[in-house]
Length: 239
Image 1 (cartoon, helix red, strand yellow):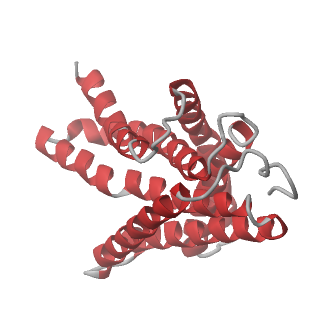
Image 2: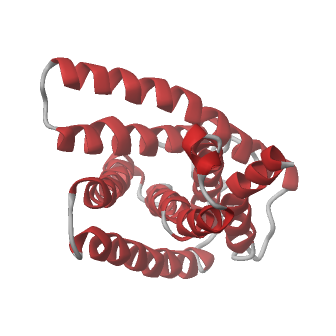
């Protein structure tokens, strides 16, 4: 029973956010495609873990700053892998025919990634020793922080990806800009909660989450008004 409960706790944040963001789409995506990208988001977490561990060991050998690892060993790896799921598994699919789909599928990929990340967190040995009330607090905390951050950062990349379909000559620049901003914000969020002390440890993540949520909301509204991308998305260089 305990294992089932922890499994539910691990999945709940991602599922709740997934249902929330799916309601943003006036033309619902096929359930099969949604599950497929969510599943691939889950799978991509595994290579992320090994890559991050490898980079950590290398950075330790070279005695590089932990700050560099936070940005280049964690944030960069995770944001690029979540993006690659969408680039490889969605963009060439006929169902990918609206600008809004870019943001939505990036968020779905991110929520799949966060789901396994949460499961690994809740099945760590030390969690089993905590009182039930503290576990509920952790579930709530990850719902409004880590899981939400993954969704928002990937949603931002999705917005730039959608824009790139209409600006073929600037496609590479737009996508790398979106990834760059997401990596910086993701890294800054991790840096603040891992390295900072006092009020800034909580203030910076709150500012990042609120700002990203506002930008993503505006992005959804803007992309809803844009025309179909099905006839132009394959033209030009794609990163």
